[in-house]
Amino acid sequence: MDDPKKLKLLIDDSLLILIMATLACCGLIYEYLLSHYSARILGSVETVIYAIIGIMIVSMGLGAFAAKKVKDAFQGFVLLELAVAFIGCSATLFIASIIGFSQTLPQVIADTYQMPMDLLPQGGLLAKISWISLQLPYIFAFILGFLIGMEIPLIARIRETIYGHHLAHNAGTIYGADYLGAGVGAAIWVLFMLKIEISQAAALTATLNLVAGFIFLMRFKKYLHNIKWLLVGHGFLALLIVAVFHYGGVWQKQMQNMLYLDKVVYQTQTPYQNLVFTERQLGGGLEPIYNFYINGRLQFSSLDEHIYHEFLVHPAMQASNQHDNILIIGGGDGLALREVLKWHPKAVTLVDLDPNLVALFKDPKKVLPPHLATKVERLTADSFNDPRVTVINDDAFIAIDKLLQNKMVFDTIIVDLPDPSHPDLNKLYSVNFYYRLNNLLNADGVMVVQSTSPFHAQNAFISIAKTVNKANFTHVEQYHQNVPSFGEWGWTIATKMGASVSERLTRNKPLSVDTFWLTSELLQGSFVFNKGFYDNKEAVKINYLGSNQLYQYHQNAWERETELSP
Image (cartoon, rainbow, N blue to C red; front, side, top):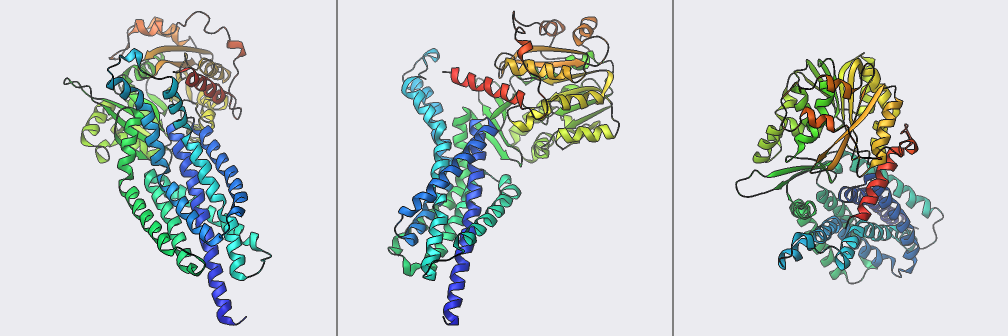
């Protein structure tokens, strides 16, 4: 074979390998993108992410088997890339719109026919539509994975067609490009894609698919037919991608309005989580209600957050003998900090993983719409800008080791973390974690832990108390209160030495600070639970590091609640 032919083969082959690496990069980003987005809207973060990734891997295998049915590898490949780019670009918008529509359909029907709220149609066909809509992420994961799985076999056939004979190392070369491309995709996702809107991430990834397909089309057009229609398809898809990139955020916001049943007034994606503010206009001159969500889970409502945060902070502070040095684990919204500062401490250390979350509440005017920024400033009472406050942005599991190394001691420790809804949080509810917090606590100090709902997740609630008790706390008690936005909610409170918190509160009845909701009498009653609440306590297990016991209790409880809800 003469040199020009060898050079042409080398160029064509290098181009194919580069295209394969690019497609692998896109495939991995789609996998992460779809699993990440699905977890955000369906909750149960870890379960959904693992399920989506698992489904895509299995369907990729099926797609690889199905690729042999494609008679024309060249034509099939171009059409395949158009399909992958189209679905990858539009999947999240389509999922959001269908789920939002299914969630609001009962209310639309009720409003149309002027039906009372207690007759809101939710069963039968509507229930099936809602159930099907919630399966869409898994359906799209299967379809997208199936199509992506066809890429490698088609590229392998195309290489052998170009060379005109069987290639001994064909599979190794293609899989090498595939693995390297996937590694690049993972890096792009972590370093860049996580920081932008999900619709923009999808559009940029689809652009790579489209460009790869277009380059293939132009380079190997002698093997293709219907070139004109393929170019039209690329042009149409290019316009769609541009539209999604520029307007996808607005569309997504409108879909979120339906999904959250309130108007979304702000949303952003940090490297760790999705943050959303919604607004509910009440009319009649009443102030709007603002709700704050992380990964689709309600964190607080401006309507009643004071109930939660007063019950979280003031019992522990009231029972502590000193209030000089306070530690808050979590609480990146600054609302627990606001309540702590009422006790005039000398220093407050707050540990939260996400610096973007803290920045949002520390200086809301920089990022939030003016009316929302003003509301957030009022809610937080500008607590983060108090000179006594030190913020540590780190994983709490690691940060407390540094505090121990610095021989820090705290009079009160307030643990205001999200529920143990996935394994990464489970470790922050373990004996190991509480034992180290015990070593940070002053001898006559108090530790309090937000402990999920005693009504909806009873075993999880009790397990937290047993776990704290195992970490060498002498007196461990639990209390609860109804917070309208959450329902019945509970906390675990503990001391190392001396009297229990309930005894201390009995001796010091008047609360030492002004409160909006909490009273001494209400607090005393909150330590009382219904008949038989702790009957099953002995059977509830302690949550050790790595056991994921609490995570399982929490997941089982909320999955059961979802099944029982109409």
